[in-house]
Image 1 (cartoon, rainbow, N blue to C red):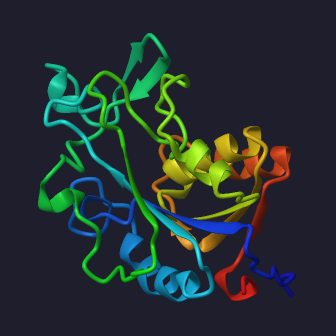
Image 2 (image 1 turned 180 degrees about the horizontal axis):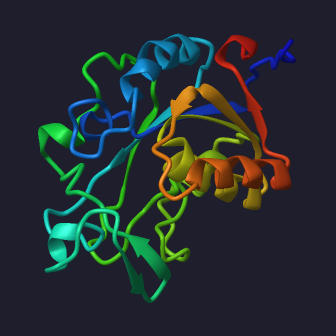
Length: 212
């Protein structure tokens, strides 16, 4: 039986990238990504404080395979900040693909944070862009409001949720990943690597039913 985790005033739920392009039919579909929407809606009712995040890319974003002649999606290139996977065009700002899934309903969300807004580097984490230097502003938002524990749910477990969890841990927050409210894409063993990272760091993984 999964240990129950009580939600308190120092807790915040960060809902990661529940956007059309990451759901079935989208340009970078996470398998079964839409299945998490009703679960996240119910989970969010247990939190007074919720943050929603959105990938929000320029049309010629450097992480798109289409920006590199001769390259295909899931090829890799080397950038100043390291290896970059090239993705299908996705979550281009002010397009339907970048919009939240139509069934996502969290009216009490206090912040919508957009990431990946800089053309020259990607952003997996909700805390830092992939250059590992450019902050999104979420750290300051959470600290100024006195939050000590971050719950994470959304898409995709092995990229944006993983990097967000690792950064939250490194910044001194207690971290809980609601794993059944996430789905993964699994590129070259990324799901196994994610679970190993969480084990190594001691990041708690739980179920939505156990949170409340």
